Image (cartoon, rainbow, N blue to C red; front, side, top):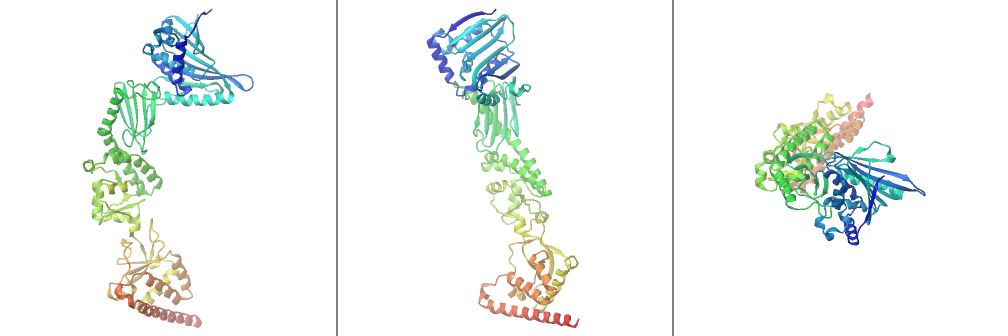
Length: 576
């Protein structure tokens, strides 16, 4: 039979314990304290289990147990460390109270009906019952055991129990996910085997890992203005939050030298804390930049290759990764000399499968007259520019940065700034369009041959900015040309070198004229040439007073030509 000894706390001890219980902001913080005590006891495994026994009227008796295989406690440890808070010794002198005792009082924060503790050491086996923090009973047990088991018994509704179980697992994972001791959680209603709570000490997207005696640091680039941080003692969470200790860098610091504050919900900012942050800053200045360079170079190549292949999803994926590193890059490139020393970093993606440096980009701006061209994906225009030595960046968050870091160029989308129509042979054009072209050439020659030639062309190349145009004029048909180049006025073509007119065979207006041409060739040619003449240039200011007369004469000539053509066509049909 167990031998029983009872003891009640003195009034002063009760007040002290009550104050200490009140310091725990979350009633479930007792999990953290019991698990930390178990780790301090050298445990290899800790099991947290929840069970609910049905009572009347939808109530249950919830039992929480935290059991470890650590060294346990004998009567000396129980009396001198665990129970010291429940006695009047040392006249409430907190300097005589060990951390183990302070942590244990957290079990009263959830207001259980009973707290029961089993423990053993040196051949002694004990059970302690605490109906409240005001009273305890101690039993000498005959059965040997290993480690320590703490139980909390509390009556609650079934709904309260369901929330309690869910919140318990959430809080244990928060406080103990990186614990160096294995921790298992089970809940009887789930009927599943105990699940491991621990997670590897790591950061998502981790770029740097540092270790020294007693300390381990993980760092990752982050796009958040206030990146994640976490401080841990032997894997137990001291503090997690969001703050930019280093701009654009998330971090986790695990060190046996870090301690929590008296409120146990923050890290103590002492010399050990400042030393850990000193290591973080040294890594950010000395080691992280090279990691950044290597990662951005690889990402830039991936963006460029995906752009060249037309892989829009791949471009978006890798662009997001590049953007995650941008805040740290901005911090690193904050000064002129820091940028100059790293001007050869090839970290900016082009669209032809290459990565470019700041130096490359600035040369491209200089060679293109102060323009910085970009493209979302590889395009015929971008490839043609590359053949001419004009580099085109992929579209992305780097555009504003390279402009801010030196020669500010005017950014322009390459496929908008340039045109590259594909000239078609007459035999490759649709039959109806082919007939229209023949008539247009004849009508143009009858009116003075404004154009050197009228050709069929395909305007539907990828990223074309001229798909909705009826025609364009070019010196060299099908050559790369500027989309901002103004066509010459039809009123003045005799004074200047004639251009080629390229007709968009896929345009619906042109297709309609080709259909009309089958019955009214003169009218179709008249309408097409009139639209071309009205759209292909501006009248110089010195000729504005003559514009109306010149335009009327030209239109009259076109109309007379069209009427003659339609009359001849009608006569031919009548004779047929």
